[in-house]
Image 1 (cartoon, rainbow, N blue to C red):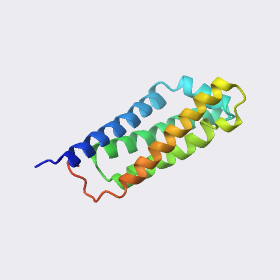
Image 2: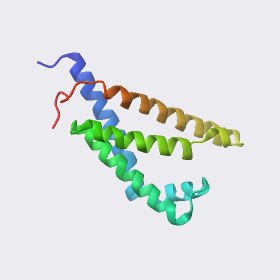
Image 3: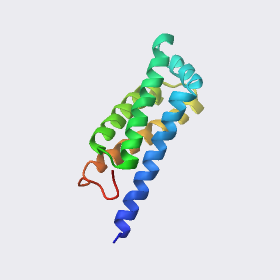
Length: 133
C-alpha cells in the first residue's frame, strides 16, 4: 500500500529526473546556444562543444537513474559532478558587472545549489527505492 510519503518521493523523483532529462536533451541535441554561452564564459571553442555534450551525458545518465531509481548513487554522483562544474563556471554571478546578467546568473547558481542539496538528501533514502528498477 502506497503511503503519501512514497507517493511524494516518487513525484519528487519524477520532477528531478525530468528536469535533468530536459537539460540533457538541450545539451546533446540543441547544443549550439549552450556552446556559444560556454565560449562567452572563457571555454575554448574546441573544448566548449565537448564540455556541453559531456555534461549532457552526465545529465542523461543521472536523470534516468533518479527517475527510474536504477543505481541512484551512481546517477546522483553524475548529477553532482554536472552541477558543481556548471554552477561555478557558467553561473559565476560574482564576476558579472551587468545587473541583469548578474541577477540571471545568481538565480541559476542558487537553483543549482538547491538541486545539489536535494540530490544529496536523496542519498539518505534507503535503497532500493520504492517503485524502482
